[in-house]
Image 1 (cartoon, rainbow, N blue to C red):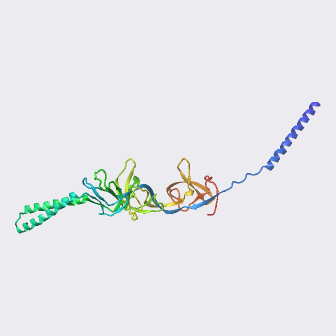
Image 2: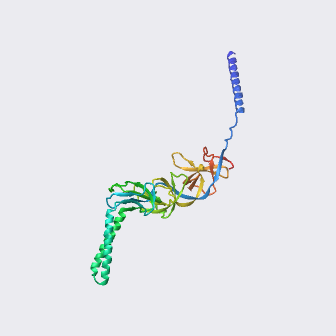
Image 3: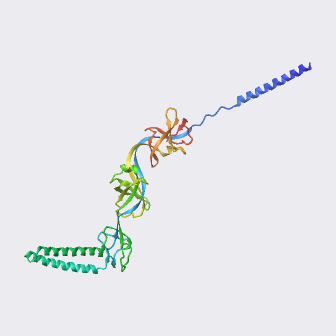
Length: 347
């Protein structure tokens, strides 16, 4: 009897515990909330389009004088006059300095004497009183004297060979010219030139006469029109560049030798797809570029790998990966993944 009572009591306790658990489990099932739907990402889109894209490269170069002339006499002599200073603009043929003229004067006296003698002998020759060989000898002596005089005159009265600016004066009045350095250096700066090193891959694209644009760091906001004046025929095997000589008229003399400048060269104009630069997704470490393209049927996005060309203003040229009229995500793509559904905002 006692054993049966104990068994009955244990059964009741077990049933009570099971019922309690069942009620507690039922309560949990009734109060569990349903999963909330994922919020759509707000994005802005831009249509891809074709545009004319200049294939422009920018190169660094220094402004140089178009011509640099060192003004020197032929022989050692004392300087008698100095007529120009550093910074003076001089004209071609303008007298810059005068050397001691004693030798020149002696040569001029001999020339005058030979001229008189030739005139006298010419009269005799015409009258038959002088042989042809004697007359020709006198004529030769006169021509030699004239050449000597002209050469001495050029080296005694020193003139500027070009229109330009005096950039160096190395002697004073009374100094003996020694030949160690020129008396003057005159540089022609209308026009000026720049020697530009250009990648060998562009060699076949550049032509003599092509227009270029020049900007000098010392003259912000100004652009100067230039042209390709000469293309050097060899390529540097170390840098794999060739040299192009660019000439700028520089009529107002604003550009000066030594200025640092940037030369913009346009090799061609491509008809290409363009997109906003903000739409480009750059994959860290991979060097790969992509965009998210909107799928019109269900407002989802697809990741598309693209090949970029030139960057100009706030746009990129796209060489491959996109077609005209596609919608690319220009804002809101930071956390997007391939296949995500988005909410498109009105632009």
